[in-house]
Amino acid sequence: MATTTPPAGESEMPRRTLRVVGEERPPGAEAMPAAPQAAVEIWRVSPAGAARARDALAVEEPLEIRLRAGGEERTVALTMRTPGHDAELAAGFLFAEGIVRGRGDLAGVEHRPDGEDAGHDPGNVVVAELAAAALPDLAPLERHFFATSACGVCGRAGLEALALRGAAAPPGPVVPAAVLSSLPEALRAAQGVFEATGGLHAAALFDPDGRLIAAREDVGRHNALDKLVGRALFAGELPFAGRILMVSGRASFEILQKALAAGAPFVCAVSAPSSLAVDVARRFGITLVGFLRGDRFNVYAGAERVAGLASGV
Image (cartoon, rainbow, N blue to C red; front, side, top):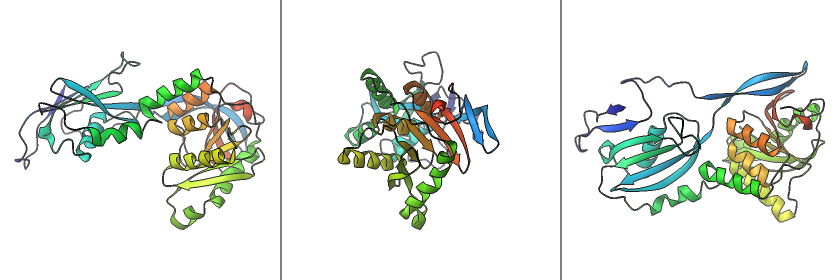
């Protein structure tokens, strides 16, 4: 168990020892440890040809933040994150929300294994215990539970609900590598605001020949995809069967969950997918292409939809 004490200068806060359980760190250690990674088998495609390879992915897992005081415990937030420094994440979140105003308000932070990973420590649940005798008013935090209902622990529940409804990617299309290689430039050409600001993500829908159907921008890549899905909903063009979905940035769990809900069989991203995104793609039969830049890209799932590649990834 690691303990910390308030630094000099916090005289306005009660001096108490803060218990941090489940995330050991040597006293004074400031170097950031390497983020956890997951290795997967992929197809690596370049002008020289296609070859099987192994790739390292940043791990993405849900984190549930709970608050405890006076014998009562409540979930206050659900989020997706790369595991590591979870106690700090929880404490920083509670401080930013005004639940705690200093170290003295926290009696301890416990890193608890969740139900799925009960054999592992740390897990995906952090419990912050308040020094107060009772929980404060948590109504202001409800937005963090509902706003993240498309991700995190709720996101996993959402995937289970989709699975029970028989959700799966529709068949096809089979797309040549040359068409995939043309998509990033087509996406960038469609991003008028990005050209002016350099600060927006985009989501775009293409036909199997690489012709742009529609594109939407937003400061958040998930919001951009929501806009694209909403446009298709209004136009009566759902599901995205026979289409290619392209997103700027990385392919996260949330992106794949939204793509699945929209019936997208093919998802491409400019940057890397997370480990959980690859899991979703493989489970539900979505073709997932990452690092799509110029004439090079990696295929993480559904290789049978890329012309010239055998299935098996």
